[in-house]
Length: 302
Image (cartoon, rainbow, N blue to C red; front, side, top):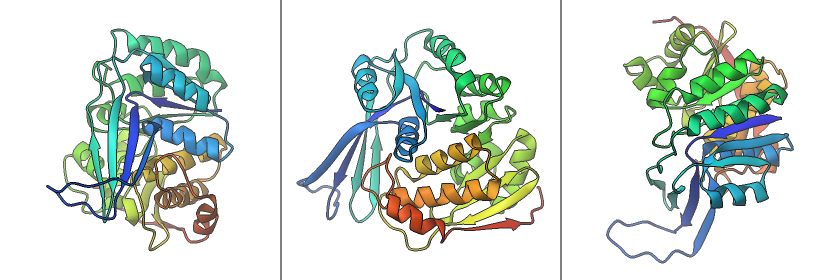
């Protein structure tokens, strides 16, 4: 069972329009609304793949009860309210994210107690996304250390202070290019060298997500470049979460890194062609697996 952790969930609303023009009135013909957040989206993809999973996190009462009716989930009702995110898909994709709502005092300790009971039975743990206000920035790192102590692989998809606090935990880190550049304090002129340097500093694997450019990863002393299928278009909002699901599934099943990375890239591409985050197109996924290229590359740490 793979546990996913969401510390700032959202109600994801998607509008689909033929075009978007600033300052004009638009009549929205297609609206999708669903419970979300990055960890929830990871759990949805794993569930669709038939992988045993349990979503854990922080929410309000309504969100916690509604999600438990859809997925195996345990969310603590410790937020004032769950935020909304709006994605407008037209000629391009525009995202509008509300700020998170305040977490109750002691929410982190309650969540750690819950995870202490569940992690020993897990095959992997994924902590994804931002932190609600009031959640300590080192909570994902504390969760990672808890899982590592139990011998359970951990993947952390974080940003800014939470990502910085996770360096040194040994968990798999999955920053995008902007997040990695902020962490390193410089542009990523050579992604392979930057990933290798970050992995050495971190003491664990690093998978750099690069959108339609694919992935660059450093793990077990090797650097890998992953080229995704060409010409994939659609809604990229949930691609990173689908890729995280692939990484988590591979870690849980002890697969070799080239196989893990191929699966992650194919799942990410299969999410782009679906209308909402938290889903993949199974036929596209099967097709894309054959088109993903994984190459071992040389690097020089800088």
